Image (cartoon, rainbow, N blue to C red; front, top):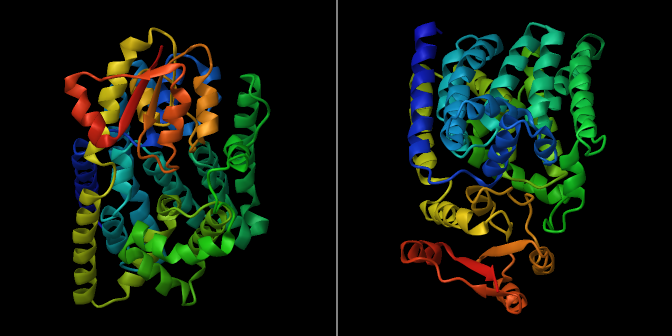
Length: 431
């Protein structure tokens, strides 16, 4: 596959991600937490940034640009688009290593991803993560174990699933690939030491401890249920590539492809022990697309072109119609309106985007009960409470009644009222 073809596909993919960015009203809820962390790093507030349960790798990538004055949302979207474009090169190399003629279908399937460009537009960490994982997987085919370990170490700092990169090679070649575990282990210890130095305790994986305490995920740990959901979620995440992955799993794989299949299997196992979401499976995109491309390379040219053309059309359709809804722009508008009203006092909300746009730290990534939210609202320094009327827990009436004594519902300015009503946002101020 020529360099000019790679550049063309990379450019088209980056352009598509930026088009979706222009159509995206606000970042994702996790995205605003990443942006808040990046702002803290940019301001030199490392202790605050490291107090988050999210890994610091992606916010650290954003922090230099923010320190130079870049708009946080646009910076994250640009970084996501560039990361996706840059992933084309290592994936092309992986495809070529997996099977003759597999480079082209691998990168086209990747560029037609129904989910990754949307994640770039919504300020998720997956595009940067997949880029690092793709290079690590390529180095693994060259048996450059220290490079694999370094990639796994960087990927782990972005998402914990980065450890699966090294593990997939160690499972198959333990007497050679064990060297990849050394840089990875160094990254794990370094992050834990950084958190300890910041006063948050020596915690290797705070996200795991956080999830263990959650009471808002009734299906957490239901392994069989999540395994049954996995095929449908893989199909949502990868479309045609998921079907091709099934075909790859049913045949005897060449040695060079086996670590990729191990990474997919390990990812499925990890997700099944937590909760199954389609986004979680994107973390093994660096393995799925070359495996799928290798299968497609064995098809006749006519059917291969039909499959790739259909994948591109489906990717455009799903990318354009999915993601953050336009009505969520109300959260940004209400948050910006609240910012000067708070006068340095605290805000309680079950809507992370409102907190971030108001200049405050987004709440922890979970759904709080009415009792927990009311306890937070009763803190003396809380000036405003902002709630979702149609929250998943269906507890707005209970919350509104519990706030009656100390808070009064605010009548928003006319310019915001319709937006807030359409989105179902209620604002309360302390009496």
